[in-house]
Picture 1: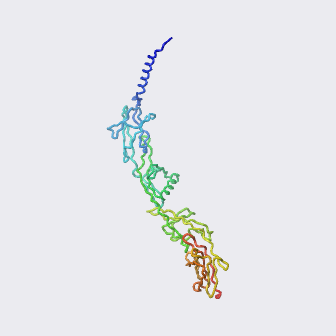
Picture 2: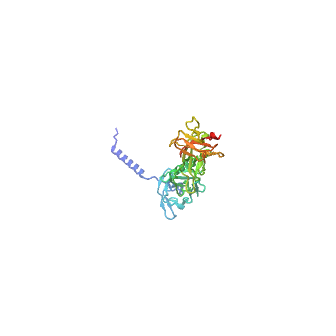
Picture 3: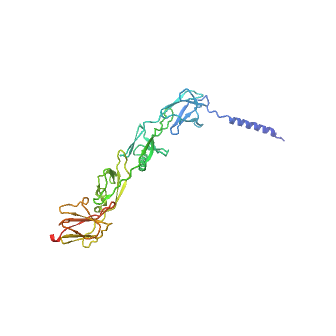
Length: 394
């Protein structure tokens, strides 16, 4: 029967554990001088401001800004790629800068030249065309922008048919309505090594989109059936989908012909804004809602709207539905003259009293047109007429 010497076994285990601890405490050897090669470079990220430096089996990597004074490279080390992620934020982007590297095993000096940022980048804004132009970007076909208080850069493909370009235009239109400060730059091009160092983001351009001016005040002139437009305004033509320069005091027949009685009395909304100038972009839009024109009043002995007759060589007229808040109006067109609703001299009627009109005012054969008066938001009704025929003159 064998008896185990527990004291000896315990001692042997203790020695074994001590050996394992000593071995594990020795740091792994990162490089083998026999297989070391000169330092090389990988990814250059100008947004993260890091340079990937491969040690290539050198246990220490040194860098220098002048090739004379050397400093050990420090930074996050990735054992899988055997590379440092070296911080380059301390290097000025105003001019290109050359860094020199060597290893402790292979001291062949390798250099990499980091580019300066693009200082020629310019942003121009055409207020009339509502378009941005980007200059000083050479062959770059992408820009980036962000709001002043937002640090997320948004890429824009400068191809005008691209989705990102259309999204950019739409967003600028929205920001222009309220005003905003935005920042532009050209994006970085990530480098892949000393033979392809990529490009830094350009200098940043701050730009202020001025808040659009208030929409113009546009109302109906009910007397001459016009809108009080000016040549500084423009209206939207839904047929061509274009904004067209306004004339002074444009007729309803030009801007909203479908609202007229003769064209079906449809409700129409006219869009009008102040046109852009070289100093200011176009204003917010005024939406002028024009209801369909009302039917003309009826005339005759049994009419609830208007009746007339002759007495003692005078014309007697009466508007039956007229009130101070719902006035009517009439105009006299003498023989030999044509009727133009927009230039006629309309006379206001605000009560239903009998009206006695002399032959001097309403001569034989003249035509009298009547209609319900409009206001700044409503068209007058369509007009109708009768011809004056005094019995004693027939």
